[in-house]
Every structure is written in structure tokens, then in C-alpha cells.
Image (tube, rainbow, N blue to C red; front, side, top):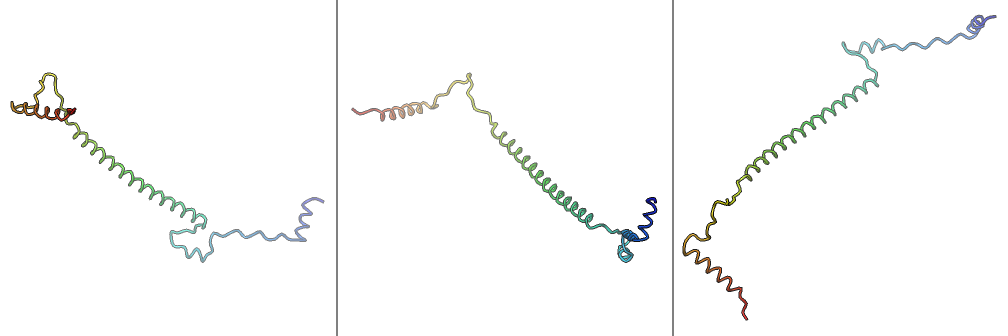
Length: 132
């Protein structure tokens, strides 16, 4: 006796249970509730899509904040450059130096002024003398 025969005997004694029903995409009543142009999406896929949208939204906000900070920094840098240029131009006053060809002027230009200056120096020096 061969294996095929015994298989047929086993089926006759205990029949196989019917195969499980194949899943149907959507019952007829649910398909009727889907609007035109819409489609049913599994919940896991839908939550992943929403998570990605939330990530995109957050990335957009961070990008906007970064642009705002960059614009603020550029404005501040331009302002500071302008202030530095202004400061450099105001400090560039030519230094006053005496040249070797120019003779030194006396302290007093009037004849009585020189005598008065000498008198002031003498009186000051007189106060420095020590009394013995």
C-alpha cells in the first residue's frame, strides 16, 4: 500500500477543517461610508504619517528660529562694524608733533610776561629753603 492510499483513508476518517477565510479589504457597509476619492488606511500607517508630519512641523519651527537668530546676528554685526568705523575715523585726528625745523617758542611772548614767570619760580623755590 502506498502513501496516497493512507492519505485518502485519513481524510475519510477525519476531514480537514476548512481553510481560514481570507481577509476582505473592507466590508460593503464601510466601503459605502468612505467618501469619494478617499481610502482606508491602517491605523499604524496613519500614526506613522502623523508622527512624520509632527517632525516636519517641528523642523520648520526650528528653521524659522535659526533664520531669525541669523538675521539678528547679521544686523548686530553690521551695526558693530558701523560703530567701529565711526570710532576709527574720530580717533584718526593727526597727532601734533613738533618738527625739527620749527624753533621752540618761549613761554611768555610779552616782555613783562617772562619776568613774571621768573618771579613766580623764584617765590616757589624760596618756599623750599630750609630755615636753620
